[in-house]
View: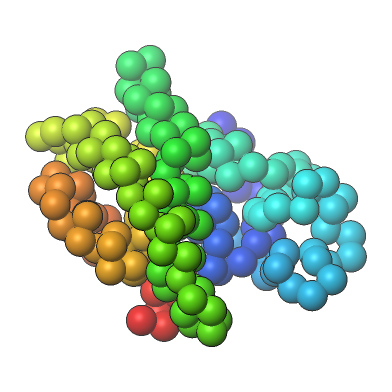
Length: 220
């Protein structure tokens, strides 16, 4: 494990799900850091020079002691392994496999469905003065139900998504569900899953979650 060295810098946006994931990891580890706001949706695209940090023009990017990274999963794992503080990955292979499975579920199935197809259409679209795409929402609901059922099943009688301790799996899922539940459809579906609802309440009370709340949550 390396020492904390210079202050790590996270390049991203407070509204971003994938910026929030490493922010949660930094908060849980107790690591001071600097967030440099990068709005990839600004007129003209990312600021000049940002593509040198992230050649695909996405957020976040990260720098620490000359080490540059992009992709939230890689950044979060680096934060866990490079800094002291509570471990955010299980020590055993089965536990780590479960963490990676939940992260893959979130990236491959949940994010697009819960955030773009449901939250954006139900909440962001009306806020921007355009009608919600009801057909898109309706088409997304079956997969949303599957995502919630799978996460609920993984919890079973344990407190966290990958076992008895908080992990990167929980930090990956929380920002996605935080936006999803702002949509009426999302809140209703989440309420139908007892284990996931219990988990959500526990997560919502954590100082790391309170410290990184999205502007979209604060606006509600």
